[in-house]
Image (cartoon, rainbow, N blue to C red; front, top):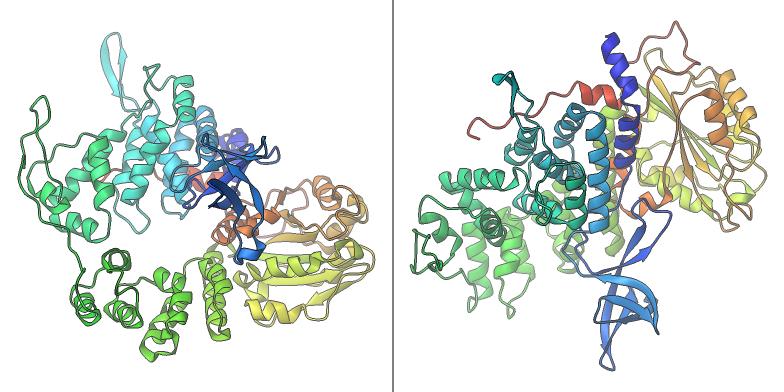
Length: 631
């Protein structure tokens, strides 16, 4: 136990890095055109934003992206070298869709490398811990790093004799790629791992750490071998290979085979991929040379009725349906209804396609509506909240918001166990206009907290308790009706107002503040927190800027100062987080999960020790992933 405690203490810098990455919201890949501009405030030094362009007088003119064309703003002209210029002034760099965001990839890889340098095993356990989570970008980076790092099971010798083998952490990277599970690596992510390792910035980090010997070529470690194992397993299980092709992954599987120079054991591999083989110049190829391959399936010339019958019989997934639909038929009401009835659409598909279902009038169809509501009840993320912006009917909006609420509740259920949360919302005059935004943000995550363990207060110079009768968007909006900005600021008044709510002996307490930190001193706030005897383990601070700015200058430091006095952490919740509906739940959940527990100097010696663990403790207790037996 003493050794574990010492290791937790020594891993402080690593824990800070891991915490920072759980709050990181930039995407590794943007599947639409965008513009990169310098941003000194960002961790990666640049900012990405979506843009579009159109030809005007034989020039490519770049515009911001907006729902209404009238709201688009002209940025500049796209030059042949990829820069976007206003006259001759460079205003940004154009990025096409689909590729890696190099700055994000290199930043994340560097952070993982820093953790590895501090503690090799901790990095491998972090990857094992992350495997079951949803953050795909982070899993790609961790898998890429572990496949490339230099702890690979080599023999350790003493006086020329092998005494044991070193730890093989590359095997953990292999396991992340080869284990078949609910959140395993898709073929697309497997390809992305190779893309990361091929980046110049990542290759430079690997050389710096001594992972690769080549001064010219990127170091891939065990990546190619792992891809070969992945392909071989699917070739030996033909139904899996067939499923990849039917799922629209044919081209990705071919790219993976080309990257690792995969040599199939049977001609069936080429046949199912419809991959015609031509003899190589050196004549090394042996299988399916010159053999004809079947033409790709086509629905061209088929009637709408025939296509619907085909969908009902074959039950292809939605991506394949869209790829096969001829332009003269298109996605009609009958085709979409057949796809829903055949089970071709996943729950995520149904939520994403809500605007299309609405436009086709299918949400009024009893069978389709029933299936759509089932998807809502099974929602796993907040994607529905974003889709709700694009539908017209109130029924569709409410249904999608219900899906978002369900997702929040599911994700927060485990991390809010034995946790009592107090939320304080500043509605003083300096927050003019920001109270509306604060309420909007609250609706995106408050529904995830159990009502009996959530206490909310709005305040200026007086605190007013807010009763949220329903943990939904509608319930939150109703609770805040009638509250507008105005008056002074007293954080102490807010804390005092909720002081009578006492945590249970086994509960930890988390304070979340929403405001600009203007007002009284941190000393006064800390004093009132002590009086409540809540003993919070951490503060969360969402700094929201009102129309007055931060009182004409920078935000205050009241909450941060109080946290320092109480000697507890104060983690920032970035306002920009809420621009990405896919990240809201993940980041807030991770922030709460990462909150230190039961360690502060205010701790009651008679209080029952909480059952929740710190992030480092959780990672250290994670067993290293093991490769499948067949690998």
